[in-house]
Amino acid sequence: MADAVHFLPITKKELDYLGWDYVDVIIVNGDAYVDHPSFGAAVIGRVLEREGLRVAILPQPNWQDDLRDFKKLGTPRLFFGVTSGNMDSMVNHYTANKRLRSDDAYTAGGKSGFRPDYAATVYSRIIRQLFPGTPIVLGGVEASMRRLSHYDYWSDTLKPSILLDSQADVLVYGMGERPIVQLARLMQQPDWREHLSECSQIAYIDNSIDRYKSENPILLHDYAEELKDKRKYGEDFVAMEKESNIRVQRTLIQPYTDKYVVIRPPFPVATEAEMDSFALFDRMKNAPHPKYLKRGDIPAFEMIKNSITIHRGCFGGCSFCAIAAHQGKAIASRSEASVMREVEDLVQRPYFKGHISDLGGPSANMYKMHGTDLSLCEKCARASCLVPKKCPNLRADHHPVTALYQKVMNTNGVKHITIGSGIRYDMLLTDNEKERAMLGLGDYLRQVVRHHVSGRLKVAPEHTDAEVLALMRKPSFDHFLDFLKDFNEENRKCGKNQQLIPYFIASHPGCTVEKMMKLCDLTHQYRLMTDQVQDFTPTPMTYATAMYYLGYDPYTGKKVHVAKSKQERQDQHLFFFADKPENKARIRQLRGKKR
Image (cartoon, rainbow, N blue to C red; front, side):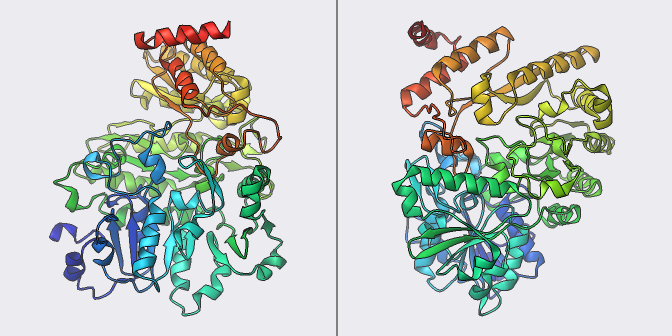
């Protein structure tokens, strides 16, 4: 038991060891319990613990037996927190072609089968059945991205807000440190339900919207209308996405016949001091719970245990990505001092051997970036600050992140840093030498190529076709070719022979077999490796998923080709591996059809 003292308790024995006769909050989690800043349930648990609350974790409870796991920690004094884990459970379980995965990176030993489909909903319904009077708060990516009506790829249906299906009381969306604390304080009051409208960054069901009328809320179409007419959903998606891109947002309300799902505006972009306070490495064990020692490694932890997150948010606006809808478009960065404290802490951990595997965020080189005039950002509804052209108000200064890399490299015990979270290469391109020097673009590329690439640097052009790239909200493929030239030139200067490895996506809305043929030809022409590839998976609340469901662009009304049949998706994917002998006959057949 002594090994588990510094972990949040997960068993009745651990509660007894701590002398706890009650628990304030129980967090039910679809992942194994890893006490590390990259695992959301652990972070929320530690944030609540810092508030003076008693928090227990119930990781991967059995939902198929007599439900004893759900009962073993008792009834929490405040609420059950429910999350499916770090991923949407359906993305975790199934491939893009809806094939069941044989492994699970968030489970000990990488074994699958330790969580249900639609885990947040299943857990919540069980809790409602067993503890009918205890509040339930949903959180995590699965809940966040399903907070409004959404297209669900795996059932091929338009589903209502997860609040209705799950029977939960409240939903925390986005990064949850601030809203969960505000909510926990409120829920200690007997009339807390009457004051939910005073909270930020939460969603809940209300029977009336009269109290919101003075706020000029955005009233979406009734879910029943969306079911009858897809165009209603398209209009709602555009309204939702535009509002989520603005810094100062309004309340969103969606009717469900005689009730309403209310989405309260998010907290302002986290300050540097707030971001530093969210870096809880010094309160955490930074390891999986000892109960998993005999069950094998947890692959997701092994992947990130030597990495450090320095910022959150992304202003890239890629249409297939949910990061901005969850973390926000604006960048929130930690201070250099906070990052350095974590580096020094990491160096002391027994598993660290000198290699920091990542120092970044959703896009590694967005650290400390923001608009020059923030008042313009407050009302800007652009999904991307980079596409179709870089916003003139964006100050893409790379000096802070370059200086941080250098400082970390000079730390005793650090031998090597690689940048694993990907680089937004189009920010490094300019024909203006004055701008290049002012923003430190050349210095950043030089630093990365010489010191932070482990043979290969992964970047994400995603496609080669101009129409597909426009729908992806990605820059022209010519930008990638320009960066490839710069990357190769820097390698030549420092005497290295490193490779640029591009990520590509097949079957994205707008993509056809013919366009994949051209992608295949171009990648062969430039001798690009195509092993970092994937098929498009429609996930809730993204622009690309809206196009997949609707069959047209909700912003323009223009029809968009969508690869929905299994055969077409397989055919598009084949062109990533056209040289494989087993694919050549089908490739010849498809090329013949083109003629």
